[in-house]
Image 1 (cartoon, rainbow, N blue to C red):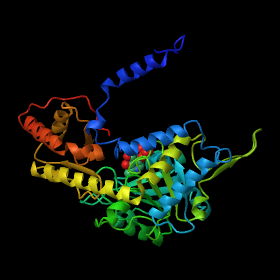
Image 2 (image 1 turned 30 degrees about the vertical axis):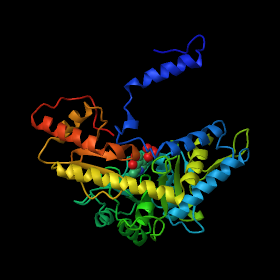
Image 3 (image 1 turned 30 degrees about the horizontal axis):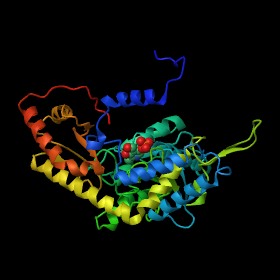
Length: 411
Ligand SMILES: Cc1ncc(COP(=O)(O)O)c(C=O)c1O
């Protein structure tokens, strides 16, 4: 087991060691990873890094000590709310990621229900089968039961089936914009109408789509309303560290109004240091992540985000067309930057195994079996190479030459 070195090492030694440690990492800069990375060009990355370093030591826990960070956060939340059609009473906060945003929204819904539905002892929430596992993680920790409802044949959430799953203990419904597995947008207006009819809290998980769907819509893509423009949507999550292109450790959790937002806050004073009050789950927060999000949003502006979105949509279409030309099927009708595909005619797991041997880090879908891609601009120049290797991998799989590689079916 590694122990703390007796004497410290020099930076040059550590620098070398860390570079060597990277040897086994996947080459994301060459577009080899269809998950984890949201690259929008070196210029954007540079802005994020510089802003992060500028506020590297500052702590988002201390808005009175660092009014700069308080202002950045308030600007980021306001810009995001504006983008997602929040009204003048809408509120929100920056969090460390999608999981924390979702956790907080579920906790707020639970605490709202304690007031609005005091008879409910063990709350129940209804989510589509395709919703992110963060809802289960949050619910498990918060003493809430989750019911996952099968999606339709097109992989969209089925609002009628969700309505049928509502019982006396149900407090919350969820829709994704889009859902991670197939990249399709759930019918948010339909789910929200059900939520309104049953007086339930409705959350839209726009962790992936929050900073891409509005621009795709502006580019004329046929995307339905999915945000606070839809009556009944109470809260949303939108990740800055995905298609906001900010440094990792940045997301937003947003509320239609101050009355909903108030369920998120926490305050405690029964200890020697007086009042400890936070809006989010964590205490200390990286000042760098807050500063980088603010800087990138202002660096890109609407035009910048729209231009990147157009390139991503073109890349998705090019890959989708190539995949179909190879005889594979795109699962559902992806609307943004995620696509997944497979085929009943070929063992797609074997294709994925073979593809991995050429340096691609392959995301795997389980239902239906498939290959999953979440795109960023590193994929723009490698479309032909990817499709060429896919063609080769399919031939290898057909010829029975697929070799099992050690890559689990997780993302
Ligand atoms: C739809 C969706 N929601 C939530 C999350 C969780 O985000 P994070 O990994 O930032 O916690 C993800 C992550 O991929 C996602 O795709």
